[in-house]
Length: 248
Image 1 (cartoon, rainbow, N blue to C red):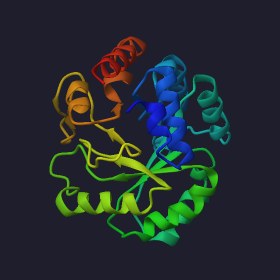
Image 2: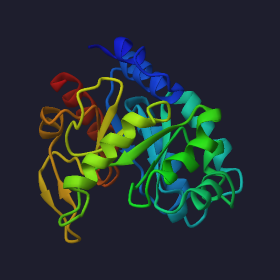
Image 3: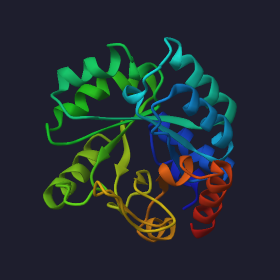
Image 4: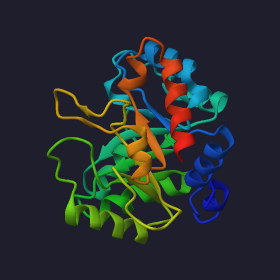
């Protein structure tokens, strides 16, 4: 199925927008902008924003975050036509994650189109996030699998994530996973740890190539250091975008 057809299968606003912009921009690339300097992050997004469908942030690692950070991110999102994914990895009871999502100094629900969560706390975590995010047209990814060596997101944990995704499919738009986990085209699989050279780093992050990710059924590849540590980030982003699109 093409992206326009898949967009009609979901009732979630964020998922519909993502399918449509991937089709329009011809990109399946998510930039993991894991930078601690705000100005470097903005410079990177301005450089490669034309190549990506999703910008993935870790807003709490930025040391010089300005008070108007959300306005700037939304401005860049509208300029370059991508969605914002705050990689918060919520992992608490429903009432707590509601407050973490909508309140505090970041007010994530106000600017992040997509967030993610672990399923360890039970379905209440999805229900709590859903109460805040669904009225705002947001989407949730479940951490069904991870790219770090020795992680426990396997077996029954992964199966449970799939079961709950189907139950809450108006808000859950897909999975963080190393492969496609369900034969339902409304769900999106985003694969982390993608680099041209497979292998691992010194902290047990395991990398797969774009071709491996696509072969496993990934819809969106998440690339961080392979782009922002490159001598020419734009050229690298273009390579990842073109190779993944052609592979699909």
